[in-house]
Every structure is written in structure tokens, then in C-alpha cells.
Length: 331
Image 1 (cartoon, helix red, strand yellow):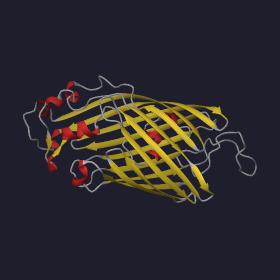
Image 2 (cartoon, rainbow, N blue to C red; image 1 turned 180 degrees about the vertical axis):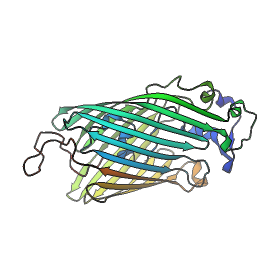
Image 3 (cartoon, rainbow, N blue to C red; image 1 turned 90 degrees about the vertical axis):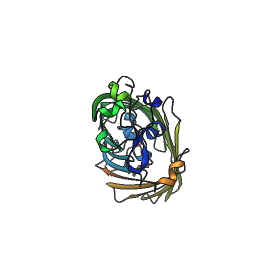
Image 4 (cartoon, helix red, strand yellow; image 1 turned 30 degrees about the vertical axis):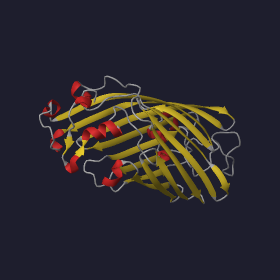
């Protein structure tokens, strides 16, 4: 992308959609994963490996995001994740697979995560995490026609590259609040061949996430949360959300992505094992007049009690032993 900034704009044919503008302005083809999710509060394990052992019970989650409806070649994201706390209450394992499509480009991330946590003070846990995996990049220029077909990069009909990834994170949490810092990929430079470097530039990315839960009464909880993504040379991506949990079952809220979109969120805890969430984004920037918004859906499956600590003969958690986080978990 360093070279392509001086090139003429490469146009993806459908809808006169400029691939170069997308690359420069929205950063979808970074060499590392950017957590461009509206429901990031349910997706923390995707970009912070320290989270994977903090959950009350093992869970599986599946997310689908369809962005900028009505714009051909717009991003589509599918993510599968697993968080698994071990019974010793100190270790956790995780798995992530993310497939991201944009125009002629498909990028798939796969990683395995590990976390180790200590009780920082009473009921407050500090978790450290690492993940390792790889990024599979495929660019198929035969999927479109271009304004400048003589560009040298277009002479390579397809590009297929693999790059290793190593990420790290810290996650500090209590039953009522959390804050985390992560770097999804510490290997930021020299990941791709010269051809791919004309399309994708690797930059070190940092994420800061946090949230707090206020119990307003026995049937109502309020949770404000935020997520900040930082990539050198790019504008800071700031997200803030406000969610209410009613009767430990129904979630309703709103979110704002700075200079980008406003969103509505809803979720429902069907039973002790299944949570379903949905969000809709409306662009507040220049793209708002060219698309019908973005849709995102998530399903979480809770598989058991896992490493949530010992219980007495009546099934109650023993005070001061293990994780004292109420169920259902609000983050």
C-alpha cells in the first residue's frame, strides 16, 4: 500500500466501488486482524487472548457480519470462536477462525490462545494471554474489471500468501467491570511478498477495551462499554455502547462508532445454554447515502460450568473460592 498510494485509483467494477479508497480509509486489509464488530462486548476473545480463561463456563460462538448492504464487494465477516477455562481456575484455552471478504480479497485468520490468570486481589483477577496462528490471504483480480487494467499488479491474476501471527493481551476483571489491552499481531512487518505489499501494508495494532455493570435493581442491569483500536498512521477507531439487561434474559442498547456509524443492539438469553444477539449499523459518514446499513448476528453456546470454582453441597459457590461471576455473564 506504500507504493499504491502514489498509483492511480484502482476501481472495482461493481457499483464503481474504489478498492483503493476502502484500503486507505477503512483498513479492512491490514496484515493483522481489526475487531470491526459492533457486538465487541460478546467477542472479546477474538482480539484479546487473555480473555479466554476468564469466562465462567466453556463457550462456543459464531458471528456473521454483512457490512454496507447494497454496495457490491463490501465486507463480509464470519467468525467462529471458543473459550475454555480449565478446572484449576488459572489456565484457559481458546480458538479463533475468522474469514473476512472484501471485493476480490479473502483473508482467513486462525489462531490458538492460552491465558494464565492470578487473583490480583479479592474477587479481582488479572489474566495474561498469548495466541499464535496464521493469516491466509487470497487476492483474485479476475473477479472484477478495473479502470486501469495496465497496472503491473493486475498482471498477477491471483495472489496467495500465508503469514504467521503472534498476539498478546492483558485482561483485568471483576464480576462488575473489566478492562483489557491487546496487540492482535506482534509480527507487523515483512509478512508479505512484494506483490502483496502493493495491496496490503502491515501495521502494529493496539486495542483497549473496557466496561462496567451497574445493578439498578434485581431485574435491571446497565452496562456501558468501549473499544478503541489504534493503528499508526490511521485515525483512531473509537466505539462506545450502552446496554441494558432485563430480567437476566433480554438485552437492549445502542452504540456509536466515532465518525462512522450509530447502531442498535438487541439480545436474548434463550436458556442457560444459548444467547442470540443482533445489531444494525447506520453510517454517519459519506457512505451513508450509498448503502442500507450493516447487519451483525451472533450466537453463543454455553457448554457447562467449566472452571467457575468449587461449590457446596447445595450447588452454591463457596465465598472466596474461584470466580465469583454471576450467570448469565454480561460480558
